[in-house]
Image (tube, each protein chain N blue to C red):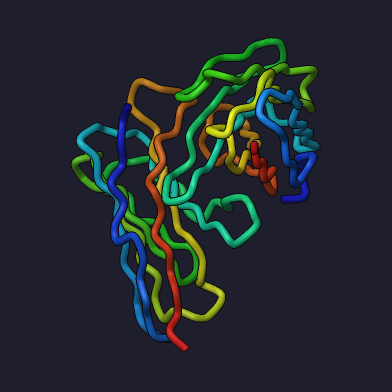
Length: 112
Length: 112
C-alpha cells in the first residue's frame, strides 16, 4: 500500500540487540497500529495510537515500546530482541477507529 | 484472549468453482471485516460489514454479517487464478474501538 511505508523490509538481529521499526503514512489518518503475524495465526495487535500523542497496549505488548512521533510516524522498538520476536511486523493506519485499516508491506524480522 | 474460528484452513479448488469460508466466535461483534493477503504483502480490505444481517458484495465477492452477530461468511463466485492467497476475517468486539480480533486465515489454492 503506497500510503503506508515501513522500513526496513528485512532485518536479522542477534539475541539481545535492539532496533526500531519505522512506519510513516501519507494518508492523514489519526490512528496507527503495530501488529505481528506468525505462521498459521492471524495478526495480533502489539500497540496502537488513536491519535498523535497517545499510545496504548494491545494484545501482546511485552518486549516492545512505541513512539508516536507526529501524526505521520509511529515507531516500534525492540530493546533486547529475543528469538520469540521473530515474526513479520505490520504497521496499519485507520481513519478513526480500527475499521478499514490500511496496511504497510511488512518488516520481516529474524532474531537468532 | 478472544478467538475467532476461521474455516477451512485451506482450500484446493478448480478455476471457475465457487468458494465459501466462514468465521465464528462465542463473542458478539459490531463489525466484521474480510481481508486478502498476497505473498510478501500486507492484508488488503475486501469487504466491511457493520450491521447484523448485512449482505455486501464487491465484484465476485459476497460477505454476510450473521444475524447472531457471532459469525460472518465470505463467498467467492467463479474463482480465477488471481484469487489465490490467504483470506482473513477480523471482528471488532462490541466494547472495543481499536482492537480487532483476527481469524487464522483461509489459504486458497487453485488446482492446476
